[in-house]
Amino acid sequence: MILKDKTTITFYNGLTTIGGPMIEVAYGHDHVLFDLGEVYRPELALPDENYRTLIQNQLIGDVANFYDPKITGVVLDTERWQHAGAYLSHLHLDHSKALNLIAPEIPVFAGPLTAKMLPILNAAGDFLLPAAGRQSSYTRPITAVEPGETVRVGQISLEVWSSDHDAYGATGLIVTTPDREVAYTGDIRLHGYHPDWVKQFLTRAQHSDVLITEATGYSWPEEAASKDDQEFQGPKSETELTAEVVELQKANPNRQITFNTYPTNVERLLQIMANSPRTVVLHAKRAQLLKQLGKDAYYYYLPREEKISELNPKLAIPYSQLLQDKHEYLWQVVDDFASLQPGGLYLHSNAEPLGDFDPSYAPFVQQFKELEIEFRALRCSGHADQKELAEIIELVQPPTLIPVHTLHPELVENPFGKRILPKRKQTITL
Ligand SMILES: [Zn+2]
Image 1 (cartoon, rainbow, N blue to C red):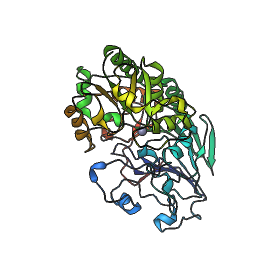
Image 2 (cartoon, protein in one colour; image 1 turned 30 degrees about the horizontal axis):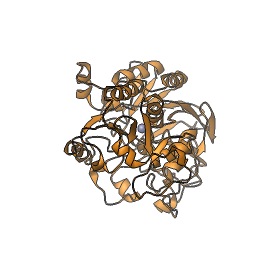
Image 3 (cartoon, rainbow, N blue to C red; image 1 turned 90 degrees about the vertical axis):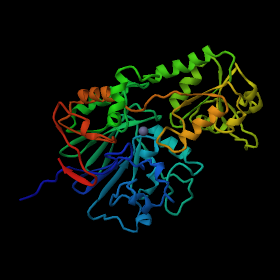
């Protein structure tokens, strides 16, 4: 009797944490791994980010036959595994930081913007974990896969789809083996700039046997309940957020207004730049990031900062002019907060520090109080809330649902079939 191969899925990490999913799909002698991030837990205050430390603290998955043997000390079993490939869905560190740990001979695939931006973001060597024997600024090669295109890893194929999240160029994935199909959302939402892309991807996923979805929105059940009785204020979509930034400028014609956003949320920044009545001025480093993506922006240098040669000098605004301004500029502040005008307004739009869970957040907010500057958090989540997740699941109607990337996977229901709540390191045979 010949035993037929069966598709298996192994869940290595990121099941009951927000971020860091590491999942392997295997068939016969072929296997693929996604995503490649590190769980973000600044409160652990770890002494280092070495491989062993990350494994011991469950910040990355204890995955065999994918990591570089120079890092693990264990050779890849190429008899057992003839073809291997890895994929990362988007730029956020909880999905990308361990990219350089993947063995150099294993191809890594990502959408085109993700593939382009990761080396740029890591140019200073402070974004990704370092590759063995390389400078920290090194980023291993990534193969860009155009949305809608398919790449093969032995008998497994990977189909990359455009999606929407607060990371520029985020994608979703369909994994097809000879006997099964698995859809993986990456991080996803319906209230961003491209709900149409998300719906196209989910419509394609209707053929899948399994939907692995992020379910961040189920992590805080009490907060979600209070959202219904209007305690929750602030923008509900990216479009509303941009509108609020514009409104605040109109409502404060004679006041210094500064802001900051998260670097990988390029689209939000472009929208703010395109719609603001004031001239938007970026710190030179952020302007450089946009320049590398083919976009020009006004920019400034902090005192004693080195000039960046690729930036157009005609777009430079003197820092002293920004410090004195009350009506012409909306500018990105990144440091030297004590030089801002008392009575000013600062918009913190999902910039770092990100929130209460980061020990540096409270002192960051407090400094504005002491400087008599109004601090306003203007957030818009990168993740579907519970209502949107129900809509996502309804669109796909998956025979099997596997929620990951959430503090409460047990709260996510599948009215259309089975639901599996895997344990860390558990393998499921489909
Ligand atoms: Zn993300």
